[in-house]
Image (cartoon, rainbow, N blue to C red; front, side, top):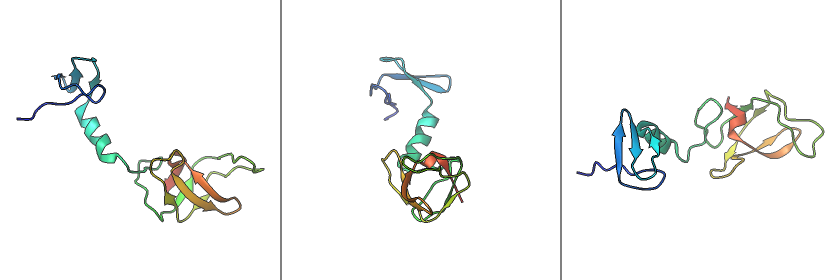
Length: 114
């Protein structure tokens, strides 16, 4: 009978349900167990701006103009980038080569799957 739900904030086992939320009696943190389970399922996955999962070798499209340090012009919205490589755990989690710019690292929040 392991119905104990552990608090994600303080790791306390003294939690109780309140409506459709769980509440920790130690730190008074409130969370939705369904959302916590969905986040745990997406852990380690890299998602584009629309929520689609990206894989190595995918093609993506840049969704907004991105300024590039040291370059006279930005990467324009609508630029298609082929054969991406993912870097989980990094801030700029996509490595790619863009024509006219060379090798770059992009954030997945500024691209959508092509």
